[in-house]
Image (cartoon, rainbow, N blue to C red; front, side, top):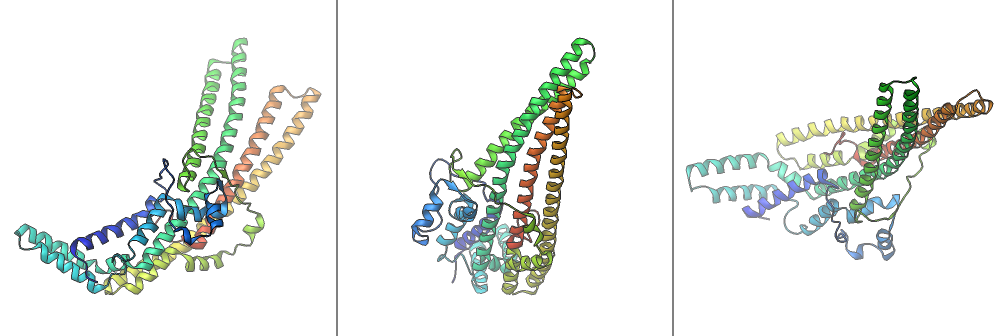
Length: 395
């Protein structure tokens, strides 16, 4: 297929936009009207559409919702489908060379400066023929879109967890404000009777103000996390769907993980490696084959590094959760002891309030640590199942 200069430029720009899609995933949303869906109506059953269109968000349907309604992911797939027969994909070596020469022929002969610029453009284009062919390959484009979809779905799962952790942090800040208010009142009373100082009051006031700021921040975080989930899954930002609970993660689920086996699974599942391997088969020049091979080897190391890092993060989160459970138990024992001492008159009301505060805070922190462990587990699974090889960001 022979493309004219304008069409080739459009193709190249389209490919650039596709590559940028990963970085933009979830960044835009239409909230004033219902979003368009990716699939044709016939591509899902009536029951499947009904489940996706109801006002209930379940954990298992997140990727399907991302595919259909996430603004960026949907645009990628619709653009892919709309350009299916336009010559955007599967460009041949001869097609690209022919169009480079055609563009060059049409540009020269107008001025010396123009000729020099056209020659430079021609040389740069010829040096990147293999890259153009690789990036136009239908399989490479498809894998890139799938990677963006999976990464977006995983990010939304983490945002759902953030909704719940922010809600717990809000509760934590609320009881901290109650405690800090009592401490401020106590400092003020001590100042009045001469057993405290102005500095004690100022410090207590600052602690209370800091807690109030933290409260506002956690409320804002909760709102932002919820709105991010909603607009990225097709709802308006102020919608009120029923949002799912986070699936349970047990010690047994973590214990059965075999890191070495999962590294091998990740090698086979990694979108990054699959793209690299496909590009290797398309590389015609020695230079492109060499550079692609270097990228492939580097990315294999990255897959192993990613999986190992996510596994260690999971174990750390599990350990932190267990330590916090033990801390909660110890503070419950302290509270029981203080209650008995207070009943006998050997502990003050202030000591009892502090013991209550410490225990109630511990209960909330235990729940937060549990969510952190759940988040670490699902991140690990997503890297094992395809995202490993991207490092800490997107590639």
